[in-house]
Image 1 (cartoon, rainbow, N blue to C red):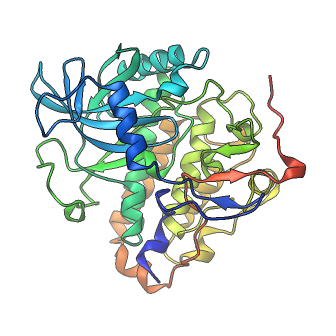
Image 2 (tube, rainbow, N blue to C red):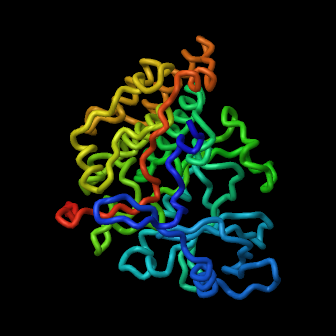
Image 3 (cartoon, one colour):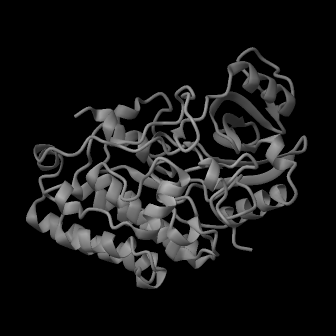
Length: 377
């Protein structure tokens, strides 16, 4: 089994040629396009090793770019510390209400105080560009860690518990994440590490867990996003059935997504998959995924039962809160410790599946006859 089969691939590969109804990965932005965009957003650089300036932030390099925004490594020249600057793309910022939504949600998340939630230092606008300055983390996303191979059950339970505790803090403050997935969970060794430390040196068993991207820099709607051309942009695999239907979501929607993450971590598979928007929505509506114990022999019955409750299609049947999920995972973790779980060795020995669905950053083109998902209003 190849190690890369243990995580949905990053959406940085070239766009494949495919017809309607297939899953394709978005083309990576051309270097020239990104360079031109940065020139239009930033003030000119002062030194050769700079990309430019945004207010008092000296921008050093691009960390990542997606359809909604870009993240830049910058130096806060007032406080003399590195930050990750998340900038809303101008096209999105020009949409009615999008800028206000970005700033409102950013301020809401900035008010959260928990070690499991990424710290937002500042929210504002500069040169008509909405941005937020976040702590610059050292480590790797959970998605990146999955590429290295399976995690032990003990590691999965611990990480899941940390995610649940972080979500509990957000939910108690009235903040719903809406996009819980491995790419938005970060494993960090803390601010004391050098930014040049290789990610491969990260000890997963001891890493801090940080939740990123609370639906920031996203379109105004909370449901699955469909463009005017009938394409869904985003990842349907981790959303709850109610979010897929475009209904109002609450904290239990995040719990469903956490269940998908746990299932994915334990088995190397996603519980609901398909090669089109309609196929994924149908799977969410009617399919029952295989029991995790059938795919991985060392999954405890207690963990399988908990994930089964998290994946209930009826939100009323899911656990009552993220705190309840955290408590259940803590209890499972204690039982594993008492039994002396052997972790990765046992997981590798049972021969885990290698088939994985398309990339989480995928763009899914809806079939011509089913080009729209009705949106609840």
